[in-house]
Image (cartoon, rainbow, N blue to C red):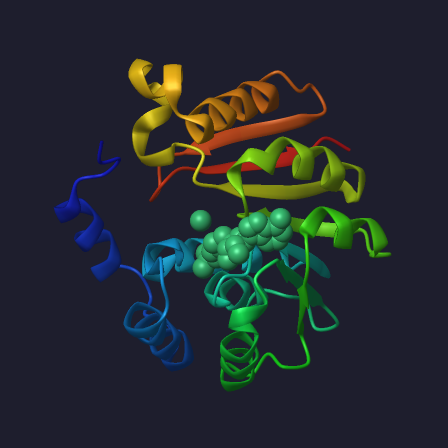
Amino acid sequence: MEISDIKILNYCEEHSSEESDALKALNRFTHANVLQSRMLSGHLQGRVLSMISHMIKPEYVLEIGTYTGYSAICLAEGLSEKGKLITIDINPELEDVIVSHIEKAGFAGKIQFIVGDAYQIIRTLPYEYDLVFIDADKLSYAKYYNQVLEKLKPGGFILVDNVLWSGKVVDEKELAKDKDTISLHAFNEMVMNDSRVEKVLIPIRDGLYLIRKIA
Ligand code: SAH
Ligand code: CA
């Protein structure tokens, strides 16, 4: 199921700021050379992440699920002057791609990439976050959410990607058999019933949940 009409999406992209040259190059490189390139956030969602980050001007940002680093760079665009973004991925193979593109984008001193299992890494990090982007293995979303909520400043934000899962979360057949769909739907219900947060689920791209920790 398509969440948005392709014509509408194209129109939205045509009326949104362009990606930086470095992001354009990373987008192109990923599609040409890396498996599962549809995981990359892309132009429109990237501009949304950048805009949200600019609105928050965060000091500490945590990203769970780097892939080739596209969304990390978008989120880093809005960091405060002293700000820092930590991004974690379990896949060590993309490290060179990530590090070189972060440097080309001018964020070498701002973005720290850590290889490993996110849950294990996050436990060891000393930071309190203004903004967290959850975008790794879908079966672990609830685990990450509960973990990072503890490490989120009061009034801080969590963004969670792919929560509509190509529309499968409203498809009874998928809800009866597909593990990721079942897990994502349960996650969405859990967030909805969590009185510690305010939330709005936006049907952009594959569904983006915006969550604010109530002070
Ligand atoms: N945020 C990226 C896309 C991330 S794709 C963007 O928008 O461009 C999801 C990533 O999660 C993959 O690169 C995968 O390797 C990573 N991942 C899967 N399980 C993980 C885990 N347990 N810990 C950290 N990263 C994980
Ligand atoms: Ca994603």
